[in-house]
Picture (cartoon, helix red, strand yellow):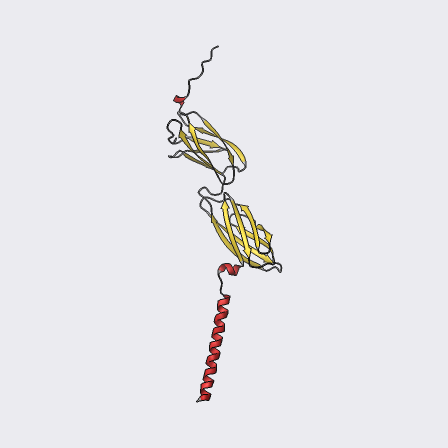
Length: 218
């Protein structure tokens, strides 16, 4: 009976030990998708500029690059070892998700990644945009339907007197013109930058409020 008991116990103990080892190996090998990629990515957007930071789990990384939605060529990141960063200008419509995929290559040519991050464009997208509000000088009420022209673009103010012009050339200074029947023409100047520039409130003066023209005698 003792011999049978020992023969039964040894296989059972061995099986238990194998199960424990297998369980420990399985736990050590499991990881999140970010861990499996080997590249952790953070992306932010300001105006039309997407800034990218990447951290790898390796110190022998030779180069890191990113693929960004709407950008034809890859974006090379700068850095060394585990930390890399870079930025790129994108063009996207309003409320659009921009996906950033980052890859890393070690000194032996092995590629890690992609690590993935996503950012969302704002209300006006990533195109240079100028916005403002047109009001009546007398009562500060919105002027509806005023025509606003700036940089070759034309639009009309809405029910709240607000206007939005997109597709302008960043890095330029533009003069805008606002016209409305019954009001004197108004002009404003704006420095167009990447993203959105709010010129604030612009007042229109009703023509009946203007001083009479100065008499000219021959």
